[in-house]
Image 1 (cartoon, rainbow, N blue to C red):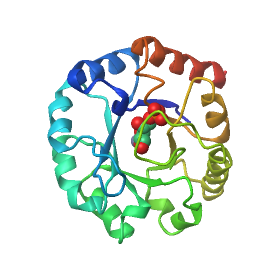
Image 2 (image 1 turned 90 degrees about the vertical axis):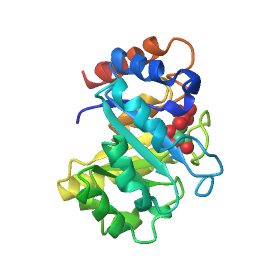
Image 3 (image 1 turned 45 degrees about the horizontal axis):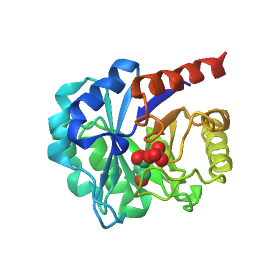
Image 4 (image 1 turned 120 degrees about the vertical axis):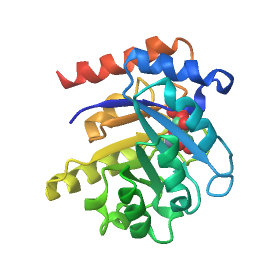
Length: 221
Ligand code: DX5
Ligand code: ZN
């Protein structure tokens, strides 16, 4: 499956956001991962609709919007209008997940379903075939710069195995604590969309993006 880097803007300089987006896009990242936090589902408040709208003209790369928001369906239309391409909602935040998925689809965005680290894969049983992407959190959501929880590796493998059994080529995105050191294990387990915040926006951002992409290529040879 195609391997994609999705730099998380949460670790970028918000005072310089347009350039931070352009830098990772120019260096070869295919997705821009945008973390929206509401202060309820997670303790932090990050950025929202007007900011997404303002950075939309910076690039035509895919806007991968990670909604850490209670009842995210309330904002699906506004997110589409702001420029979201993928809307990723947490199973834990949707009282009526099936309905929310339907809303996203109707608005012609790609559907992502996110699970917190401790949420079992079984909650996906009825909706797996409706998702374009499953986002497995590898840290407890809310903050950048945390350490990856090791049991996520086995969870990724089990999900990839299940998808293969069903003949589905659904993307598995992994988010939280990803580094150049552990990305090989995550890809090996079956993840193919890699979110990285602090590992990209620390030091030389362009070089970091290129290092991730080179690692993807080396490991697929
Ligand atoms: C955490 C966010 C992540 C975060 C990842 O709640 O969903 O996308 O920005 O940051 P790092 O890569 O620093 O763990
Ligand atoms: Zn995220």
